[in-house]
Length: 360
Image (tube, rainbow, N blue to C red; front, top):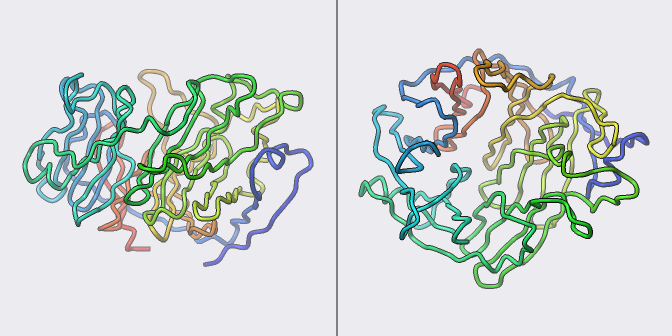
């Protein structure tokens, strides 16, 4: 079903002055609402949170393990395959790495990127060979010290785009006069260095707004890349909005739900206190974003996680096609693009389950 979308201008909303692109307001009254049931799998979660799924493989990440960062399970056999990516400071060891956010294939083998911030290197982790040989196998190790960043900026995320090109999400460590403190993407080539910068936000003017380091979480987003590398989606946490960056044209369009929240991220009186999108995944056709749309939950130790049961499904033109209502909480999601499933884990019980997107 197509959703009618229209451009709108709100004179009281400063976002239009600082978003580097068009804001499109979405009327979701005609969006299909579907109740959908989940199916459990019997794989131990360990109670630590983040994982990614590709076909029969679940790649778990746990920074609290003593010797490794990742463990891989088989969905079908429901058995552990092994532990990978050693902790340490030696050869092919890591002091700190993040979870897997993207899978890709080259030479018909499944791979992902691991960035070692301390060594300023990017590792191509060959997951197919690692599973086959039961050891961690890296195809390529690439220095990334030619990104051209100043000392105040760091790579906050990294996507593989093509054989030689990457998309790095850049953020500032602190706000310094003269710098643009807001996050942006840099397209980076192994041999040529920087190719393009994609500035989602214009540089704020200090005399017009009071946007300081204490407010930087306002632009926090969960990001995913279209598998063909042509677009990036950002699901915003503090506004009901997704941003779609076209890496071919450099243009960004901001799709915001109408009649939900008119709060401006750049207004000094900003005190909305609501959280909206909490996780995002994408394939070549659709974007899947978990939606809360209520006041911020209690995040203290021992508090129960919120019952996040709404998933918005968009196409890459920013049209919202479905609002899925699940029978169990989907706080964080992991898309299996092969079997077309959305997985999650209950953070209170550690139970793992999924919804079958083929049923839509």
